[in-house]
Image (cartoon, one colour):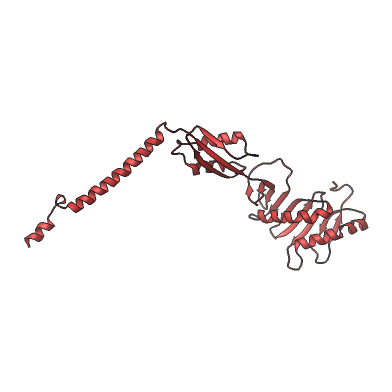
Length: 257
């Protein structure tokens, strides 16, 4: 009975196992604190400063001034502490940058590879103000371009679909010697095409029995005969009929190119 009481009343210094666990815990906490302090010290010391940023990919749209501006914001810390993900995020905010990849280049630099958007067309979202651009992959981005790009329009999230349909129309219109100047998809999924001579094609909605491309082929096949018979050019061609189309003739000089 006396032995049990003696064991229960033993203090901390009489329990070596508990002392060992406590010592290990204190050592672990001290190591963490030391590592954190060492990291802060290295970050603040003037060792391994960043002196160079090298862009390894050729650039067509991103300007040296934009690169310099972004570099001032991105190059924080030294060679060892700079956050490469943060560097990429800064450069990916530039208008024409689609993707950026960064890596350290010993002893004092960063190498940066930039993938630019390649603009395929202007983009106008239905029921939204202003225009953006859409690239070859159907990705919409905000930038300005002076190039003579076609205009695509449609509801939010349809840029890739409208771009694909624009590309479908290009070879179909070759027999006419024309190209789409604009391609629009309405909120009700109806297609409209304006040609580069000003003629508007109302193609309507895709249907199982009569698809949009099929209606366009039908018009192209009959175009020469129809214009010769009417001895006039069309301003608007309505292709939404199941077995034919209607033409509204242009007034003298209207839309001629």
